[in-house]
Amino acid sequence: MSTKSQCDEILAFLRTGQSLSPLEALEKFGCFRLGGRIYDLKKQGHKIETVMVEKNGKHFASYRLEKQDGT
Image (tube, rainbow, N blue to C red):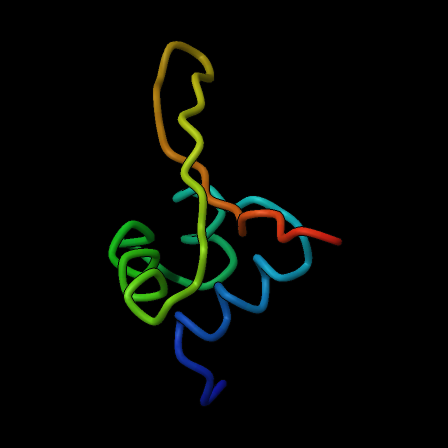
């Protein structure tokens, strides 16, 4: 079992440049409350952008790290 927290795992994933949806967070990290973990990461000062997605008539948020100048 990993000793990394869900926030650590989610942040490491977002740092790869990929976006993350709640279903992906559940599958990859066992995270039922991605919005809560994103809130925690934002409180720590991480710049995370929320993008609303529509797929198969459903709406949900997807998250990614904001692009920094020069990257």
